[in-house]
Amino acid sequence: LIMKERYTLPFQIPITFKSSLLMVKLILIHTIIQTSTLIILEVLLLMMKDISLYHVTMVVFMY
Image 1 (cartoon, one colour):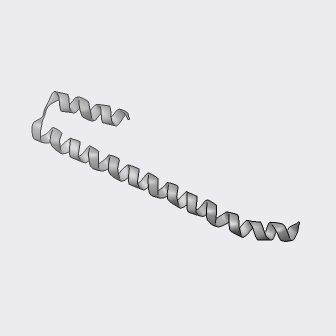
Image 2 (cartoon, rainbow, N blue to C red):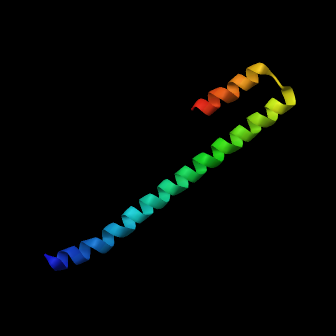
Image 3 (cartoon, one colour):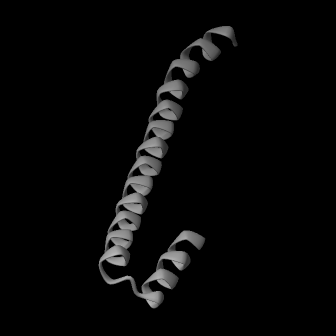
C-alpha cells in the first residue's frame, strides 16, 4: 500500500500543477484583454467625450 502511494503521488502532482498553471495563464490573458479593452474605451471616451460611450464603459465595468 505504501509503495502504491509512492508511485501514484508523483504522477498526480504534475497534473495539478499543470492545471493550476493553465488557470493562471487563463486569468492573466483575461485580465490583459479586459484592461486593454478598458484602456481603448477610455481613450475613445476622452476623444469623443460622449455620454453614450460613457454608459458603455460603465456597462463594461459592471461585467
